[in-house]
Amino acid sequence: MSTAPWLIAGLGNPGPEYAATRHNIGFLVVDALAERAGVKLARHKRAHALAAEAKVGIPGSMHRLVLAEPQSFMNESGGPIKALMSFYGIDPDRLIVIHDELDLPFAALRVKFGGGDNGHNGLKSIRRSIGTGDFLRVRAGIGRPPGRQDPAAFVLKPFASAERSELPTFVDRCADAVESLVSDGLERTQNLFND
Image (cartoon, one colour):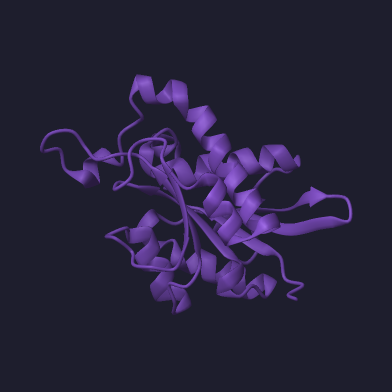
């Protein structure tokens, strides 16, 4: 059994202008996990990321985590994630990436292992950097843009007001799914959380 921690990487774009956008839901989930664990993210000494070490579980069955938010832009997320994996000795099967998903309705959640990138530039960058797409993903649904709106513009817009009222519950559910993946494994987490 691996003694390496789990790397929990939320995807987003750095900077206050992106903080409340759909593309940044990965950051929101990592922030929620950090708050639960009572830790604060800080600049990592070897990776262009904010990171914090944390533990989840129950006494006697605690799991070590590295919570991380790459501070490169979304399409270059792979570099910081690869640097963190190298620093902590983490293999891809202990990487959980939380990202926005256009192909799921808002507040729908799917957990999966591996698969394609589905046009997501953050996932493409990670696959390119670490040499595989075989890692766990928490796919947080943000829905499709209305009408003919460009998906690239849509993901960089803030959540609609109706969505904002549901967002805290959805972020908590995504954080629960991450903790379940670490403690209970993929199959049980899929059974509990996949919409």
